[in-house]
Image (tube, rainbow, N blue to C red; front, side, top):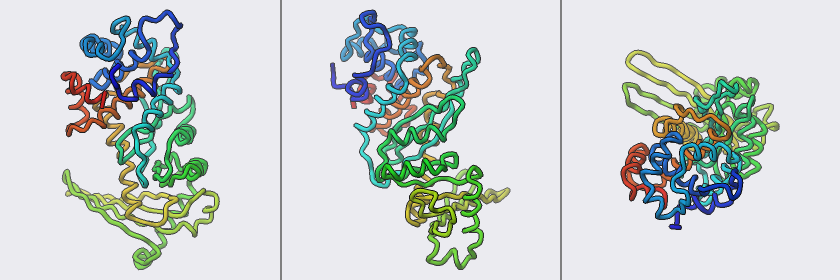
Length: 372
C-alpha cells in the first residue's frame, strides 16, 4: 500500500471492525479511506461517497486492496453507524497529535455546535451537540466530544480537555465553560485559561464588573490597569475595542478559582452612519495582566466560529446533513474534521471550498491532499 497519510493507516489500523469476522467483503480501512476521500471531494452522504468511490475506483485500486470493489452506500452507512464513536474519536486524536506541533502560547478555543438535522423524530432523538477544540495557529481541529443526552457543554468540556495536550497553551471558552472544575483541569494540565463571564456566575460577574465600573479615568490609566486598543473599519462601520486587564487579587472568591490571577474587560464601540452601540464583555484569566496578550487571545477565540463552524456549514454542508442513525452522526462529524484538517494542511493558496472542488475533479490534487 502506498504511504497514505497516517490518519488513514497507522492511527486507524487497530479500530475494531463492528462486523462479523469472516463475513465481510470490504476491508474496514478501505471503507474509512474512501469515506474520507469522498468527504474531501464534497460528499455529504453515503450515496455520494459511493458514487465518488466508483468514479475513482481505478485510483483507489492503486493503494487500497478493494477485495470486493467499491462498497455500496448501504455498506458505508451500516459500518459507520456501528463503529464505536469513542474509539473512532481516539483514532482521530492519535492522528492529530502525530501531525500537530504544540506552539507555546497557542490559543485553543473550545466551543460547541449543534448538528441541526441529526435529530430523529421517529425515535424521539434530539440533534446531537459536539464540543470541539481548535488550534488557532496550526488551524486544525484538535478533537471533539459529543455532549451526553440531556446534558450540556459543562460536562463535555472537561472530557475534551482530558484528551488534549494543552501544556503551555491558552484555552479560551465562552461563559458556558466558566466553571471552577474546568479552570482547575486546565491549570492541572499545564495550560492557562481565559473564560468569559455572564449571568451563570452572577456574583463573580458582578464583582468583576464593579472593579472596572468603580475605576475612574485616572485609575484606568495608571499602572494598576493595563490597556490595549484596536480599531477596525469596513462594511460601512467602524469598531473600536478597548481591552483592560488588572489583578484579580481584590476578588473575595479568588481562592475558589484555581490559578486565577487577572480579570479583563473588552469594551466594543461600533459606529455606523445611523447609530453607535456599546458592549462590555468580562473575563477571568490565569495569565498575568497583559492587555495586548488578552486582546489577541479573545480575538483568536472567534477563529473556531469563522474557520471551523462556518467552514463545516458552508463547505461541508454540515447543517443540512440528515445522517441520524446509530453512531453515524458523530462518526461522520469526525470524517468532516479529518477532511478539514487534510485540506488545511495542503499548502496551495485557495479556499477550502475550491480545494474540495479541485479534489473532486483532479485525482492528482486529491493525492496531494491525502498523501501529503
